[in-house]
Amino acid sequence: MRRWLPILLIFALGTAGTLPAAEKELKVGFVYVSPIGDAGWSYAHDLGRQHIAAMPGVETAYVESVPEGADAERVILNMARKNFDLIFATSFGYMDPMLKVAQQFPDTVFMHCSGFKRHRNMGNYFGRMYQARYLSGMVAGAMTRKKILGYVAAFPIPEVIRGINAFTLGAQAVTPEVQVRVVWTKTWYDPATEKEAAKSLLDVGADVIAQHQDSPGPQEAAQEAGVYSIGYNSDMSPFAPKAHLVAPVWNWGPFYEEIVTAVRDGSWTSQSHWYGMDKGMVALSPMTELVPQAVQDMVMAKKAEITAGTFKVFTGPISDQAGTLRIPAGESATDEALLGMDWFVQGVVGTTE
Image (cartoon, rainbow, N blue to C red; front, side, top):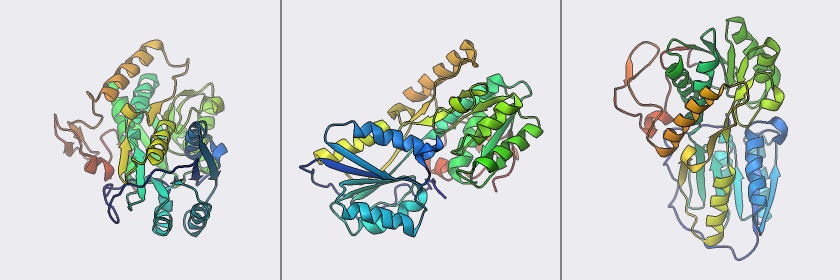
């Protein structure tokens, strides 16, 4: 599995510490699990790399399509041996290999995306994508005519379940009786499989297709069927200009700049970061001209509330599929509850397996 931020977000190995500032040009390495041309997860991270590559005195390098496990350890070890000052590993399965290398190179800073283990010279980071998912759900809820939305889901882990729930809540805020039908592909990047999954949702009446994978397969299926689509990771409108409405997207550049600056000035410490729209890590792509201006205005108003912290997506009353109250009225889910979410809200048709 590539990305999972479990409950033990704050778990650390060793003692958090501050590393001394480097009096030299900073060498920064990135390790990607998929091709950077996939328009998805690795593509978004590479945009972040390009952001810091434009900073004075920063040299970057990357290795793409690195399998999780022994290959990842080899690539990370090679970067450390080449005296990289800072290394980002962008897949959940890179966590243990990175930790093993970090323990061997105490003067190098290591940052792992979506994991939970830390060391004195290794931190972790992820984003509150569910916030943008909610907003994209509002768009879908406003645009559906059949009141059936299709969701091509990756793996049944809290990150994905949390996103489906947020998307559903956003859609229900606009169209209360809407259904969200879920199909699991158990893939992160398999264009053919993901496109077929989207077609199966179209067959049961979905007229808006959303996704949690890296490929544009579901977008293409939606356009071919003459329905709408919601992208993910980056703006996927070039792949389906007649279908694409909006996409929850990652904006890693500001965060990577923050870490580079901290390493350079010596203020970096090992910690866990879980940033949201207020920090700019999570965003919404521009809504296309297919989305009426009134809908765009409504969504942007809610985005402002989320960014300001006056609206929290998972605020009760919220019940699960069986009708059991999970989050009481007036209460908001804790981060621990969000990070371990393993149930669907009412309105979702599908299982969490």
